[in-house]
Length: 522
Image (tube, rainbow, N blue to C red; front, side, top):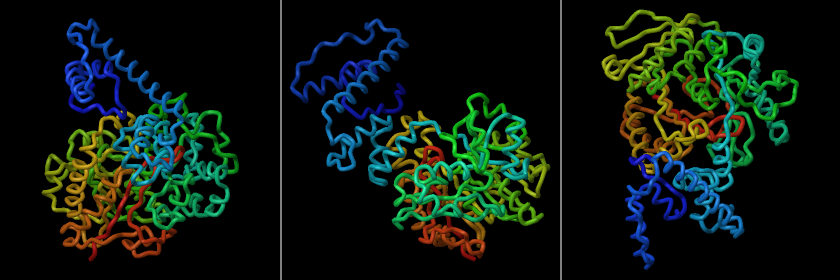
């Protein structure tokens, strides 16, 4: 047990379990309970004389927790108590407790999800978080500028791995579940044949109010959740034995998950830099910035460079589509030097070579092997001193990771209520305000997280729009219904004038993400 973090248990524990967690604290807690309930306290053996090796104590604790968990569920089942997890429950605490136990998610997260989405969608989100997600990849146009189908053919022949465009897979999966809904939107959700990667094709929720979407597949509660067309270059690895899924006219596979016979990292295509592992929701965030050849872009929270390289690939694709040779410039910035070293370490594999150094030893510049794209790595002091302004700034802020818990199972028990509701929103707002100062007039600003919690998403957006930075710098909302930043008509079908999108996690589609966007007036 990590002594620096409180252990969150959603139901009253047996005294013996408390004793195994921490004998001293258990003794104090037990005596308080005795006094409260007017019970007689039984003397306890000294914790140092229990005769258990620390490893045996941990094993005993795990076994006891499993037994306690099973006992609670068994009792709930025997009682057949409708207050434990039904949509019409009048006992909210009991509903929270039951969902928390059933899906192994802390009660405070369950409570937040219920207040935002209601019981049905919350239960679906929790279920998704307890199953492995699909392996989604992004084709790297810097190293592999040809079509998605040619990429699928290459990995099938060279790596003996099957892959298929995500739009094709999920369109067929949805046809089995809800053919009327899919047929109605089939043209909107089919992969673009023109090669245009900038059209954001969103089908609005039927209720006209929600900003919740999923990528490619219909959600079970379709009236509250809209759909987004998967980006061009977004593919999924599919299991061996389902080669028919690579045929556009074939039936959909039952579950597009990783081919267990071959590691992603051992594939020739990955070693050559032909693709990156990147969720469809993360790819949509990159697409939302709608980069163009000639843009200067700041990835303010670059992390390990996933979105930095995604932006470079998007620019390269646009250059090929428009036959443009305009030079584009990307800055990868982060406050953690180790993350920037990881970005630097990936440069060669994804198609970038050193291009000399900047004005100081802290700067590293890399040029694409193909295409006129340059990436520069900057730490905070170098970025501050540069006085640069950018056409587009992406803020992929640190967050609770509540939308990607199936990728990081332990994260659900590592985050605390204090972090989610106090520390993270304050940090996210301060980062967003700082990043906004680097947007030039007429430029675009994107804020994104891998969270599905309002406090980190719309809550931060609302606070930002009330700040002096927002008004003084001249920002306005950039709706997904109209591509105002580039003064073009958008192919987006989302006509409700919203500038935020919450992507809910789905079984075969995307993880949970959030994106908001603004433009800076001239």
